[in-house]
Length: 64
Image 1: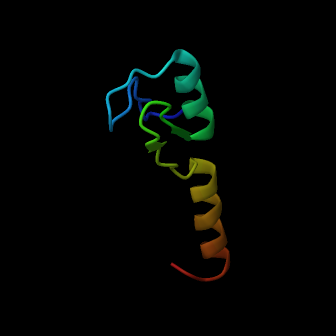
Image 2 (image 1 turned 90 degrees about the horizontal axis):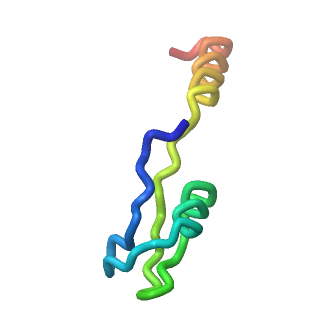
Image 3 (image 1 turned 120 degrees about the vertical axis):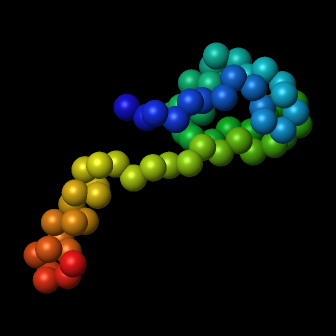
């Protein structure tokens, strides 16, 4: 699955995120801190399947 760790507190104000907020962050990859209204965004990494498909398409088109 994803190797990125979900934070347990807001990186801006340090307010502790509830377990429900942490689960939402895992799924949606973005939430807003209820304390300071800071947007917490997690980077979305491309899936390996998509990378393999891109490489396959490039090789079929004669690209390197």
